[in-house]
Length: 157
Image (cartoon, rainbow, N blue to C red):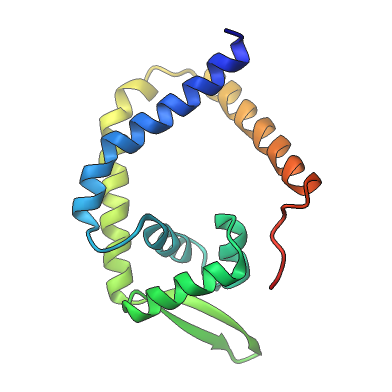
């Protein structure tokens, strides 16, 4: 097996293990909310004045699909839409108190998982981190270029 195959299998294996390990606790603590809903809430909290276009690009979804997701979140009372006084065309989103509570649960779970996995990261050197981050950045840029080349970039609807 080539080194490339080993790296790709390693990434997939790590991802599946993380999902499997975290799944039950996430589902129990965030019962009634989908992963997409929770991550949309997280994005809105971390990115003030989020709009449908920004969210769609961040989640690699169409604007139409994202509009449905935000509509669900509004119906569940987790986010609310608003417009700025200087821009009546664009619609932005912010969390409600209930949305902030869900985001806090999600943040706390991530902190708990980070604490669990801290033993591994404590032994990674700066040089190793830099190498890993450099590889991830290069691979991500390559995939962005491939997406663009194949015409799969998100289009406005």
